[in-house]
Image 1 (cartoon, rainbow, N blue to C red):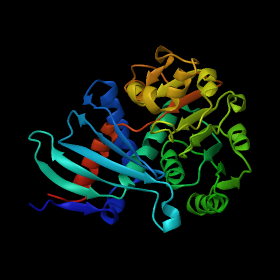
Image 2 (image 1 turned 45 degrees about the vertical axis):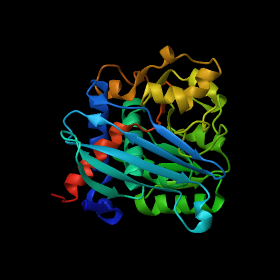
Image 3 (image 1 turned 180 degrees about the vertical axis):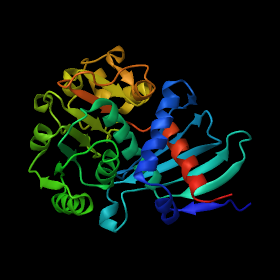
Image 4 (image 1 turned 60 degrees about the vertical axis):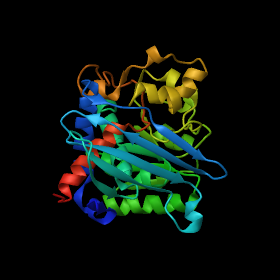
Length: 320
């Protein structure tokens, strides 16, 4: 049986950041309203390498298919001339369970829906008027976060830091050329944090990069890097200092998100989490209510995002 498929080139032409933000927002609303079924994530760290696999899936009410997504992250790949991340999605009919096709996206849809989730989080939790976005990291996700954030907020300035100096310079040039932003490559993460109205952390770090003492009134942080056990970008005390801590999925974030470190340190309990992002999107819990609040959204990536973006891409890609 030969299944129809869509390749990365086709998918890149079929789904825009604006599309992704709309699709992911609807998926979070469905989750907040209890219209999803999401199993636990399978995380596999490959012994002897700096490599990992994630397997995610979910059912979303009203979506005609279910995606099973396999994504990889191998962080030594650039030295081999290969991208850090890759993956594919297998699609099944949600009514019959029969296989429908494959999306050979090489991780594109995962990157795009993660950027879209960051935009949805910022739309709920960041101040309406912002000027400076800070980014820690200079990889693929640093690019998608900015591309999608532009769909929900206007800003003119980008400050960034990365452990990869040449990569940081290239990233800043690219963001200036693509979006006309004033860009500054900073010497360290503290300078980025102190200047940012919205701070995005998008690295595979296993040691904290952001300290609680750097947080300032009005700051919103979207943390996307801690998607497997052992990763950490924020000092655990950051979550204790925040006025609102929102998570994409409490069960996941308690296991391997930024929240897991705050729980282990005794700084927070699960009941201290303000809301899941879906509850905020659905209007069941408010987001930011004051200009001076410090807000953090811990994003680990949830399977309903993958099913939602895959269904949209499958329809948009022109497969019968």
